[in-house]
Length: 237
Image (cartoon, rainbow, N blue to C red; front, side, top):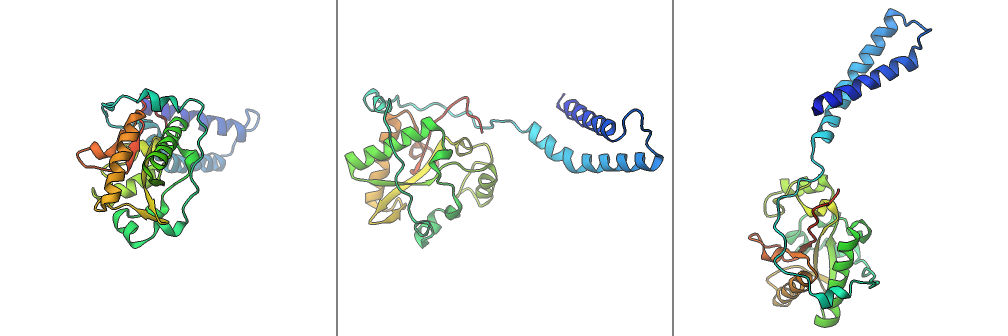
C-alpha cells in the first residue's frame, strides 16, 4: 500500500511538471520529451529511495518499556505546579573533554546540552531534580546530554554496547524525553561510579527522579546511573 502511495506521488509530480513545461497548446519535440523523461528517471533514482526510507520508518520505534514501578511523590510533584525553575549555567566546553570524561563517555564533547530541545514536562521535572539534589543533598548537577539526533544515536550504537545498545529511534533521547547527568565537584565533572561520593549521589538522584514519576537507568540490567527518562506513549520525534 505504501509503495502505491509513493508511486502515486511521483506520477502526480511528473504529470504536474509536464503540464508546467508543456501546456496543452504547446507540443514538445521528441528531443524535449526524451530530456524530460531522462530527468524524471534521474529524479526517481535519486529521490525515491530516501523518500521510501522516510515513509517506511515508523515515527516511534521505542521498545515496549514497562512503566516505572515508582509512583510520583505527591508532595514533591506538587512543586511542579507553577514552579519556575531556571537551567543551571552551562559548564565550559573543556569540562567535557578531560581524559576521565573521554574514557567514561566517548564522544560526549559533541553532545547536545540545550535544555530548550527537551520535552517541556520532562525538562521541568529534571530541573526540579537538580534543585532538590542541590538544596537537600548538597550535590550540584550538570546535564551531559539531552536531545540526541538519530544519526548520533546510530554512531554511538556502532561504537559498541559499552556505549549504547539502542539505535536510532530506540531511545527516548530522540524524543527529548531522556537525559544523562553527572555531578560537579570543585568545578569538575565527576562521572565515575567508583567514586563513593558520586555513587551516593547517583542513588539519591535516582530516588528523587523516581519520586517525580521518571525512570532511572540505575535499575536496569545494564545499569546507567546518570540516565533518567520520562516515558510517554505519545512521544513524537
